[in-house]
Image (cartoon, rainbow, N blue to C red; front, side, top):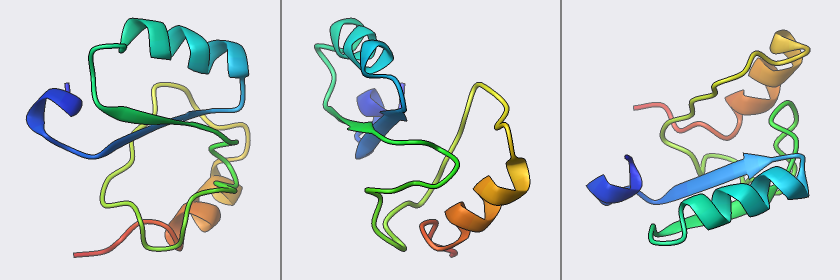
Amino acid sequence: MLCSLGAHVTGLDFSEAMLKKAQVKLSDQNWVPLLCDAEDLKGVSDASVDFATTRLPCVDPWRAAIGWSGSIVSA
């Protein structure tokens, strides 16, 4: 949905298999797949994200929040 609204979307997962499924499902959308763990965001530049969402809970939500704090741009 965000892709269709013109957003610059990066989809991330630590599973190559899940990213491949997403690439097939979203083959007509403009987005960037990134192999990375959502709890530490290696590969995501600091202050490069305006918005983040997840469908699944993190194993360690406090660690994830600390990791996300440098990547999400505050308004």
